Amino acid sequence: MNTSHALIAEDPTQAISTRIKIERGSRGWSLAELSERSGVSKAMISKIERGEASPTATVLGRLSGAFGLALSMLLSLAEQNGNRLNQHAHQNVWTDPETGYTRRTLSPPAGGMLELLEIILPPKVSVPYPASAFTFQHEQILMVEGRLLFREGEQEHQLNPGDCLQLGPPMDCVFTNPGNKACKYLIALVRR
Image (cartoon, rainbow, N blue to C red; front, side, top):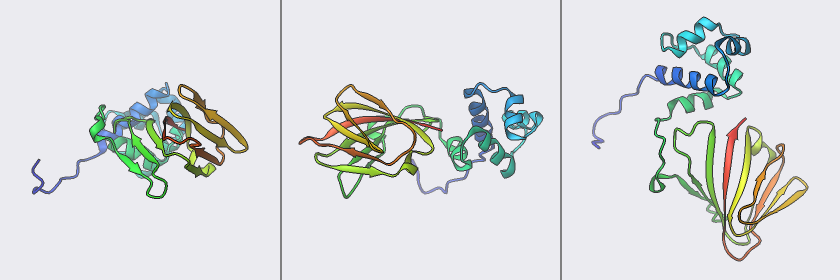
């Protein structure tokens, strides 16, 4: 790849049009239903989806609100490159410098509303999260290796390999590895 050439920004109109159509279709909504939920006319939504009109910020705000998405999330989803394969060597990995907790993003960049993560939690480490971290997502945890103590508010769950837990309403949570070896689990997130 020649990096000496300046990158030219692509017009995102078609990507936004496609994303709006995908979001409406994934919910099984007709044009009329999206129009009713958003306050945007059916004719305008149809023109946007066909790429015949570029939506204004106000229209995008109304459509994203109807989908239950922040405008930034709708635009982020539209900007994804369409790559449906995320090879292991190219997956983003983040390591917490304080605990050694490792988070690998397994989902392809074009994964849409679903995000799949692999977590490796070192032995004797606890990672707390506030309820606000869970406000805009549904989450399930699937244990792969080791043991995890997961505290959800006042309730504690002990997860062993093969166990799968669906999180309840957003509340303060703590992920703890009580063992002497790292534990590994998968997290599946779906945006609310």
